Picture (cartoon, helix red, strand yellow):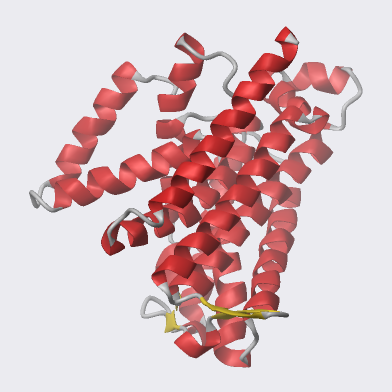
Length: 321
């Protein structure tokens, strides 16, 4: 019974957080509910990045292309082909997965700094592609999806995704599904093998593991989750633009994961939420908000060197996943 206690704590904690987020839908003012909707979707982006970086040790600087692949896969099919939300979302997932498999198969032939540079180059190519085909993408100006096209159809009815409460609940549903999937992944043998590869790749190879195949599957799963975030962003917020494919959008999930705690299930959510509100509060009081953000980041690094959740796990709660 004692050995099951940490698993029970983990389950209760994650269910409690999901229920707390659900309750916030009925408590928060409209502005903050909108912020939380955006944070939940982008936390999924950070969770996808965490699979590759936190658990597998693959420092990528190109994950914006996977997010943007989902964004454009869903947005372009809705805007130009009048597809419904379900098939458009599926197209976003397919685009992100296909791109992740292609990029992973090529980039994983390198390691370390070379891997970072290769992923950065692929991301830049994707970004420039969105700028080149402005006839379809409208580049930095982007595309605004019609409200009538953002309706989630069910056999018994439909949901208007432009409604703030519906948008929040759909974002929370996506976050909950991905959180549950990641929690299962890190406790499964495959997730353990990814952590082992991160710790000692050569030893795993000597034990007979196909390290390349495991890494490729990690990149594919990471790209799929990031694409799900991008596709959800398109259908929930109704905007698709090249800015989401820019290099700085590859740095953001890295920052969110490091702040919350790499290789933790809840770290991406905490890091994303913290950064959003630090920037929001600082920018509302001073034009030098980036200075304030920098000072906050320095303080967090000094007192939480492994991220907020990572440091809590190391010092007080080793049962945290």
